Image (cartoon, rainbow, N blue to C red; front, side):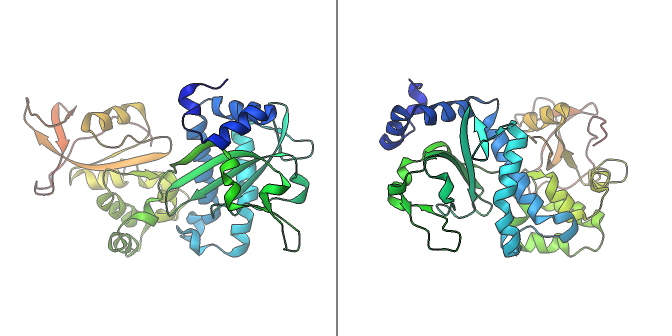
Length: 319
């Protein structure tokens, strides 16, 4: 029997599949119970998209800019990334062996367009979808049955799940948050201003000026800097932290001390491999604004009408 708070989120058809299919229930439960599974799934998908974009070498940030062959390769990369992240055993006939059961893995950037090979009939499939434009992803498990499939008429006879039978998919996570691709979603004028600069350092400085109070992933830094030593361009010894400090900017990384500062200021807390930029001003003791103590003074997030002034230093770290 599944916990009520979990089954309450499932539709009647999905609950029926879990009740009637012992293997499906075992795989579904195993995946749901993995440590930090939702966060790790999302990170694996984010990393897969970023690997395909290869921004450090190409400057690309939009899925639409990929070649058709690159998009086709996405499914294989997702399969590999998930297996490495969760250490799934190799399957006997399918991609993985999860909870002692063979499971195939299929990814599509277009919801519902999973291409299922004929040999997957009768097996369980882990169906994964992610959309960078929507910053959403989903993953679910289904038993592949002929009566639920559109019959393939392409050369390799691959099949798709009929729209009216997608309710048979037992979702692990549905429309969960995909870590944001900031370059894709930032204001076009701001993005143009970033890329108008010639040097990688100037581009990064402009990025941190214009993208405030949002998580900025490491791949965004790589794409903007397009330099092998991109992390050096963020640091305080000549990087963006020191260049923007005179204007009151704090660029927090994923260190615990930086996260505590983000919490104190009330801005998004950087997760692994992320940065958050915010402009601060000094405030008097007893202020009713959210504030943190740095360099022996109190600081709060600046409002648009507060003049820029030199800010504090962050706790010393190498990144």
